[in-house]
Image (cartoon, rainbow, N blue to C red; front, top):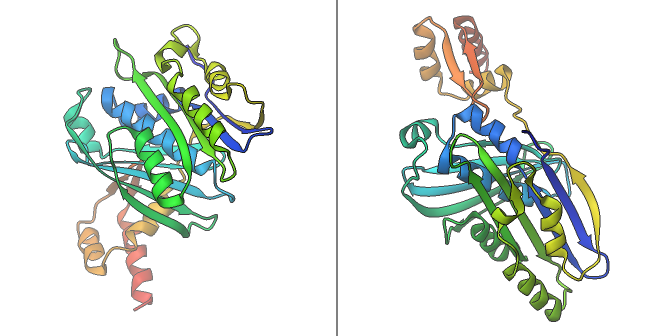
Length: 295
């Protein structure tokens, strides 16, 4: 049974804070199928993607947030790109996915890197912090405090199905941002609300999916909130053959000539959506010809 994914953004009507809740279950199940991701790897993909969505929701322009977590161990990195309109793509190195299957990998968290791009694809912000935990929510809260001086409460959790680890039962999360003028008494109350929040698994029912409205109601506590926007997230990848050709064109001319000398099709797979593009010998010759014109 399919359920509708949602991103709900809200603010306090009289209290200066921002609240976002996300259900990304079906979006991540689709992305997971493209990667053949299972079990813990699928869980990590989903949780990393929710973190990216929380950051892109704060963009003041139609740009992109790239959120990358790096590890020591059997998985080296997870990267998610998302936009303020809920478009998402994510990747884990394919060879590492195939090696671990549905098993839980040995992981040592290393770094979190956040890159913000504007509408033209130019970097307007980049920050790297040491990842204090395997918990994506804790890492995001640490990044926000260290790099953007934002006080926040973050909860992110994805759970894969016990009988079939190739799909998620749920992938959900919340983000509360304290604006600078939020009073200490309200901060303390919000901390109590978060500490007493029901477990995510208790807000999931197999026949109904994850109850995002219940999560929102629990988090608002005694505060009046205004829902600013509700968005339907979806998988999206802007890759194309032209983009792949443009990437190939950045290789050293010697490498391009070696590839061309083999005189056979070259298959290039997008790391994010796993689309396979065929680069023909004629395509390679055209790239080389253009490069020679610039010499």
